[in-house]
Image (cartoon, rainbow, N blue to C red; front, side):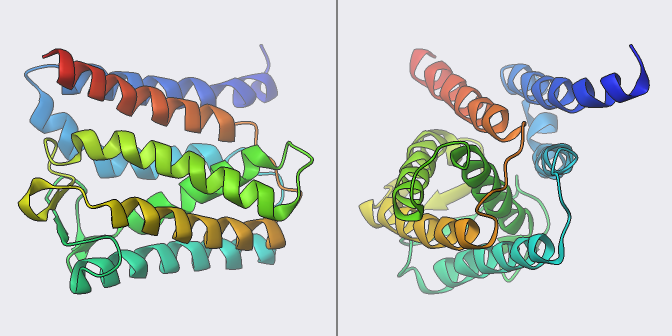
Amino acid sequence: MNWATRKYYYPPIILVNIHLAGLIGLFSSWKTFFLWLTPMSIVLSCFLVFTSHKSFTPRFFILSIALFLLGFFAEVAGVMTGTIFGSYHYGETLGFSVVDVPLVMGLNWLILIYCTGSMLNHFKLNTIVKSISGATILVLLDLLIEQVAIRNDFWHWKNREIPLQNFIAWWIISFVFLFGFFLVLKNNTNRLSLLYLIIQFGFFGSLVIFHFLK
């Protein structure tokens, strides 16, 4: 196997392995240590996904910075006002925070929108349909994450109750971000986008199953 072939296979293999290792770690006595690694896992996952990006144009960089900042400040507004997603605050798991919001949340919004948009660009659908589909996919993912978020100190809801407005806000914000993505990168695809989304659903789905069987 030459270097070009190895370069093609390494990112997906590493992407799968770091999440598999994290999943096993969270089921072990080393759970605290693996939770501490969560921000690094998000950063590494983003790096691996973007190694398969095809064209690093000014449009791509502007969109990426915009999604990062808009996602981050949406969370800042959410935490400070309690009127967007509901009343919540972040724990320690997601690492270094600015204005009480972990920086990796901006990166998380970026990678989720990027992968969802890149995956849906494989289908010949109009922008509205793709945006609706993508927003629905991301709300379904958030529904899984919410089931384990408090137990893993990602974030905490007031009275430990997840408000319906959280999912409505997630859908609306995701729709707007995806609509912008399709306008700017309407033909962008990435071979790791679908894999990343499958991994996310598998990872958090496994945590949810383990939680209810425990």
